[in-house]
Image 1 (tube, chains in turn green, orange):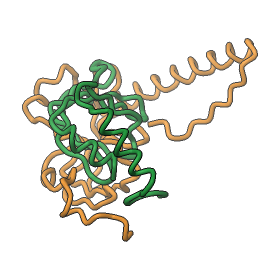
Image 2 (cartoon, chains in turn orange, brown):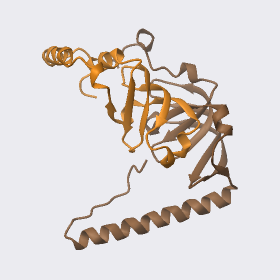
Image 3 (cartoon, chains in turn purple, orange):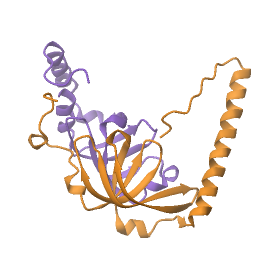
Length: 99
Length: 137
């Protein structure tokens, strides 16, 4: 739940999602769900020439299970708030846990 | 299953807006399928109609008509909405299926030769090379 809430605060920001197949996509985060599936708008594959199939695609849905990293603008993150939330979550996990 | 929040109560990354649209689906084995999304579920299992499998090699691509697909969600990497205008302006040329399959095989053989050479060089330098082709994406 924590990261789901965290990503919700980042909706509207430009992020870069790096997938487990090494494809990196930059776009504006439009929505996220409990599985951390991500929807991006106005996307651009970081290495255009290597991934021709992405040329005609403007927005996409990325399954959460294939994400390796999500790169965020540092200015969009309140690290103190995040640390606090993580501390609280560690003491009392809300949902999820072992899958 | 009790731990899952019902989708209606979340700002869900729902696929309901993508239904009946022409989508590109990238699978974990590296395949690119283009078809009309008809249905989905919480696992991102998909039903795709009028699907074609598009193979890209270099600056060319070829299409294989496949019909109706039911895709198990765990194999899905991403779904992209195809911009029909941008699709017409692609700098790629379409070639017949046989040609693209040939080109694909050549590309794969070239890649395997490079890998083999690389592994041999590493091995000669004393590195252990345990390369297994599993989920190649």
